[in-house]
Length: 270
Ligand SMILES: [Zn+2]
Image (cartoon, rainbow, N blue to C red; front, side, top):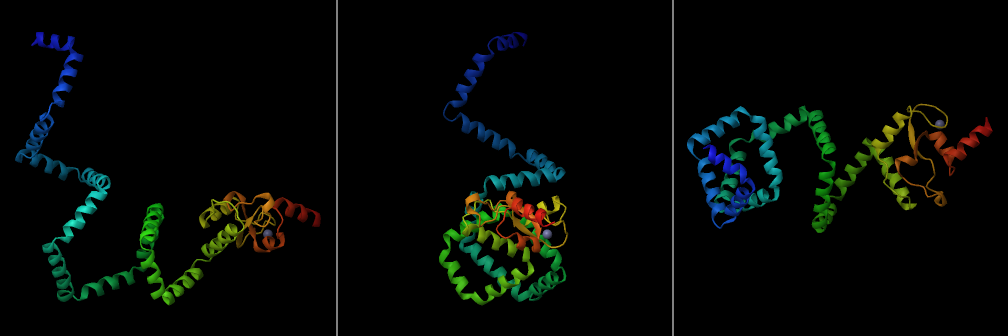
């Protein structure tokens, strides 16, 4: 035993190289894998595994999530194939029929629950969209790129409904509407982005005390371009760095002046 340890200690590198070479031999990898697989599937090992999973539900959920993320496309492709199988198709159809026939109240129940918990449902949707903004945007860009005809047809068929919805949205979200208008104006003027958003403006206004930078009044504030979009020679941007909170009165009095010019004018008038 001691002699063997001695030998192993003296020939460590050599042994490592020989072992690596052995593992490369055809069939060795497969045989090892098969042995590991067989070992892992023995009833007593499976029992240990199941017990571990029962004892560590969080790790198990995390591992599953990791697996799903790593194999997303593969799983999706498999699911498509699976759903295409005639027996599965028939089963799905039967289930849908049964749901409708046996429990006609199920849709009504869900509808009622949604109506009763509307705020909760809406808040959940808002939170989800906020945390998944980039993913959702990428998804919808991908969809738009491959379904232009369907989208155009849908818009055409639902024109009235969509107009109504966007009018309502404009009324419900005046800030977003104003921000979109500013962005359009900025683009037209050739101003560089990144374009500031509603949240950027709110954060900046809050950081500056939620008062007009020119007269100091609190109250409704609008986004004022320090270097106005009209002053192209000064290369205005629509970046939050060029945005100042101002009351609408100062904003309209300022006209095409820069913040500095407007402040100088105010100082002369006092
Ligand atoms: Zn003001």
